Every structure is written in structure tokens, then in C-alpha cells.
Image (cartoon, rainbow over all chains, first blue to last red; front, side, top):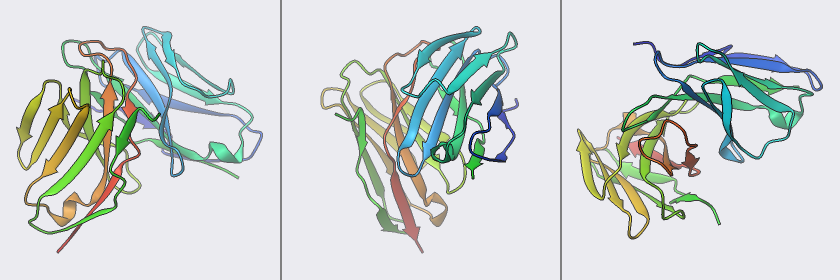
Length: 113
Length: 114
């Protein structure tokens, strides 16, 4: 069974640009969450999607947005990039049933210069 | 008040010793508890989860949960240099729901020296 797939693995962008990251969850998983990880702040929750609807949102500015498609694949977008957006962006998928552990993809390392 | 707190570390133990990692959480209604291992430059990998009070063992790993004390721990027996990583404690409010964010601690860096 394939795991969570994130693309691209690495990105270098310039301040002011925008970026789109992609996440394909484990087959059969319908919930996708996004997290930002930085050395200073640790893992911070961005948002969660289920059945193409945003169900939870963290405390990030509106420059951070996301969406989920009917096949459960998700994208997140960051507009008007700032240097502080440099981070590891992680996607996690959860299944259904009694126990719903979250599994992470390999992440996208974003560097803003 | 931080949702999830971990002993800050770093923690250094010799090979073969028991490593003990601790975590407390503030939301008494939390139902699901997870331990992730993260190697440098990699993504978090789920290694243990526990939902009920008591101990849960999986190989060299034992997770312990005490909901009354709002405390969860991870013991690594016969520690190996390959266990050297950052260990993240995560808490989720709901069990049996496919929704719900994880609240993470800042992690404890473990080094196992030969």
C-alpha cells in the first residue's frame, strides 16, 4: 500500500512569489491535514480537509490556503511568500474507523530567498 | 498554556540502556496519544499510539498513559544508536473520528552513544 506522497520534495522561491504544494493521501484515506515545521516553532497545524471541505484551520494568515479534490488529493497554496515561510511542509492522512492514526508524507522543503 | 509539553532534552543514553521520554498535555478530554520519531531532515514516522490507560508494548517500545495525571511516556529498551532521533509526542481530542488536528510537543532529541 503506497504511503502519503508529497510533491515536490524541494522548492526554492523568491519573496513575493506564490507556491503550490501537492499531497496524495494513502489510498482510502479521506482526511488530509497540513503542518508547517520550523526549528523555532516546531510543528504547527495549518488546516484539515475532509470530503473536499476545510474542517479545521490553524492560526495562519490568509496567504495560506488549501483545497481538496474529489479523489482526496490536496493542495496548499502560499501567496506573496515571505522569508519566514521557509519551512518543511508536511501532509498527513488519516483513515476511518475506530483508530485513526495519522501518517505523514516525506514533506516539501520550501526555501524562500 | 502549551497544549503538549515534553521534557526538553536533549537526552543522551548509552547503547543498551533504557531511554525514557515524557509528555504532559493540558486538555483533559484528549483521547488519542501518539509518538512519532523524526530523523534529521526527514518527516515524522509513527512508532506508537495508545488510547487506554496503562502500558502498551511493541518490541523494544513501551507507551504508558495515565489520563488522570495527563501524562504519557515512551520507554525505549535496549537503546540502539539507530534510535538517535527527535521524538514527538502528539495528542488528539477525539478517538474514532477521522477528523481532528494533532497537537504536538516540541520534541525531545535522543542520542544513543555506542
